[in-house]
Image (cartoon, rainbow over all chains, first blue to last red; front, side, top):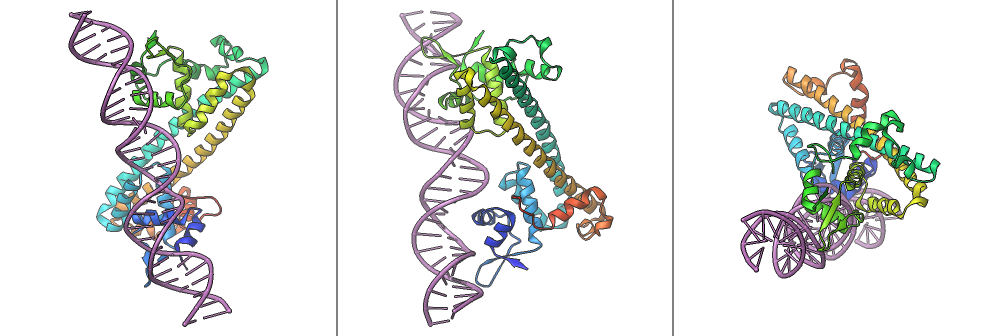
Length: 155
Length: 155
DNA sequence: CTAGAACTTAGAGTTAACTTCAAGTCAAGG
DNA sequence: CCTTGACTTGAAGTTAACTCTAAGTTCTAG
C-alpha cells in the first residue's frame, strides 16, 4: 500500500503542505517518487514520520531532525552518534518535565488563590493571608512568586 | 527599592528589550514611570513578572496573558473569570504532561534501540527483533511507532 | 555644568515553521 | 481524448515573539 502526500497527511492529521515543507527541508529523503514525480509514501515510512513527530514534540528544530535523518540513512557507523543524540534528548525531556511540574504548581497555587478570593468576595483574602494560614503545599511557591529568582531565568 | 528596566531584566535573566516589548504589548500596565518617563519597577512587580513567566511557560500567548492582566487590574468582579482561566490552564498542562510522558517513552525506546544496535554492531538487531524478545515496556510504543495513529494528530 | 551610561520611542529586521499562491503536470474515470 | 481533482515547484506571505537601530532624553558622578 502506498499513499500520496494528501493521503499520508490525512492519516497523520497534518497539512499536506507541511509534509512538502519537511521534504523540501530534507526531512524525508526516504520518500520515493513515481515516474511522474509524485511522492509515494510507503507503509514503512510511517515509522519515520512518527519519529519526526516525536522529535518535534521534544522541541527539536527541523535542522536538528535533519541531522538525525541523515545519520540514520548514512548507516551503521553512526549508531553511537544517534544513541548520543537520543540520550541528550532524554536529558532535555527530564528538564522539560521538571519545568512543567513547577509551572503546574504555580497554576495550582493560583487556582487556590482565586477559589479563596471567590469565597471571600475579594482577592485581599488570599493576598493578605499570613503564610501560616496558607495551605502547606502552597507556601513554597508563594514565597518564590513574591521574590526575585536566584540565578535561573524565569521568563 | 525600585529598579530600572535593565536592572529588572538582569534580575529575571531576560533581555531588557523583552521587558520593553511586553510593556508595549500591554503586559506591564502596572509599572510606573519617573517624571522623566523612565520605568520604575517596584519590588512587588516581581510577582507580576513571575506570573507572566509562568503563563508563558504554560504555553499561553502574549495576547492571552494580556487579557488576564487586564482582568486582574480591573478588579473584584472578574475573580470568577480569572479562576476559570487558571482552571482551564490546569487542564492544558495536564494534557501537556501526558504528551511529554508519551514523548519520553518514545525516546526511551529509541535509546534502548540504539543501545541494542550498538551491542550487536547493527540496527538489524533491534529492528528485526521479534516483539516477544523486545523488553515488555517497549512493546506498546514499538507497535505504535510502526502503525498509523488513530484520530489524534501525531506531528 | 557636563560627560557618558542607560534610558526613551517608533519602526524596521529576524527567525522558525509553516502556509498560500500561481502556473503548470499527472492520473483516473467516463 | 478529455475533464477534473490532486499533484508538482519556486517563491512570496504569515505569525509570534522577540531583537535591533536610530535619534533623542534622562540621570548620576565628577
